[in-house]
Length: 179
Image (cartoon, rainbow, N blue to C red):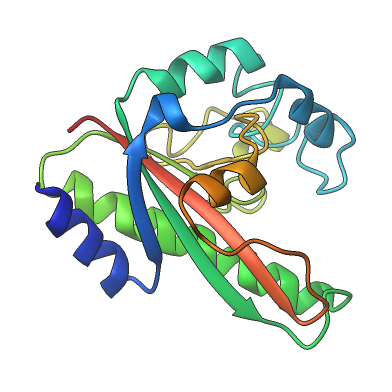
């Protein structure tokens, strides 16, 4: 697929998007602490999250195993960031959008690694909590934090808006691939 075709797919999926080399994705291993704090409740409970997704070094190598990153942004209006249901709905909209886009790209013969916000939502609960193997090992989506991505610096590099607001979520995802 051409870069233009990939960007059109992203736009048609409701994303703002930019393609950059994976070497330009800013990684900070210290971000893994956000996963270890377990505020989302998925640490050790979701195959796409730490510790199951790998060490910071392992996920960094996985990120660099692809040479291109399509950075995706979706700005979601929420009444308040304190509205947990609205925030969860926005995160799910982002993740399912990234997963859908990743599948469209796969359908065109491109191998991809999708990354989103929070852990993989494909199984609820995740098969890990049931001591069963992952039901979707080739489709699961990991969080940008699990991959230690500095989203603020990523947004800056891509000239995308990023801020913390009371009524909007600036959500990011990525699809990693080889050109």
